[in-house]
Length: 159
Image (cartoon, rainbow, N blue to C red):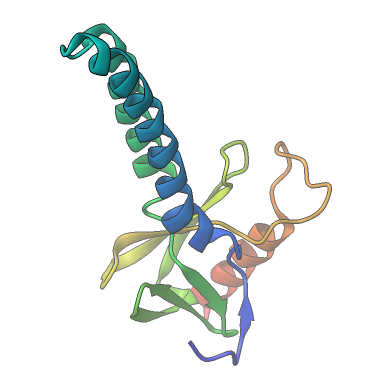
């Protein structure tokens, strides 16, 4: 992606979307495999009561990741009058005037900024990204980047 603007999305997004799920499900798989090898090897039968909790935990982990992580844009670059958004190898340029709402969730981890667009683009009508982290930021205060973005979107719509 062109570095003509300022990256406003978190650098941890790649880790959250690609590495964290592999780590979580890898540990879960190891936690399932160990009892199966130990107990199942001795008795020859599958210990079904030992499989239920990891299965439920795996479903919960997947649902949480789907809700909070998998929909995050890989990178968002502020180019002044527009934002360049990248999901994998696909990119789209979103003019600020096309954004009708900017919402922020600072209590979730990762923090989330959701842009609602006037019309659906290549990534849908909503684009969500995790903003860059700031040291000593309170989860109860709106990120200054979001406040500035809201003001710039409002100014772009008035033009």
